[in-house]
Length: 202
Image (cartoon, rainbow, N blue to C red; front, side):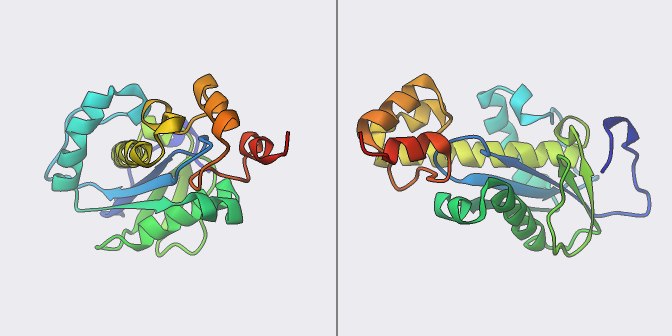
């Protein structure tokens, strides 16, 4: 596991994939995972941790990343698989799938956080605070966040009573109130305590 102050370039690796997720905390919808290999010959200005960027800025960077990256992949792990695996293992599985789907195959995967998925096709490093340090992880964080936000807006069209477009499935007061009023929909994560409570008979 790497500390933030231990980040050094790896001159022996040319193909480094950054990996990040969005949506571990919400009560509904998928967890979104992205992996990106940036092209040093096609730099992208303005990359940062997606949480520090405005929605408009993330949306502007999204097509630039897709256009200029050497490789990219977005994976969704849906609510039923999250319930089956648990949110941590579902996130690790999404990361594994995203890295395995990259072409060309990376030589190293830098994973935001303090855990590494198993069965990767390359070496890997866990990097705490990586979405603020490693440009490839920044790019992955933007793809994951934008893709998930779009997915939650689409779910809002199916289930408007929950307000997914506004809170993206996070446990806001409005979402919790709607959950208690209407009960969970098929996109709610039944392994999460507030959803389990909403399933209990009054």
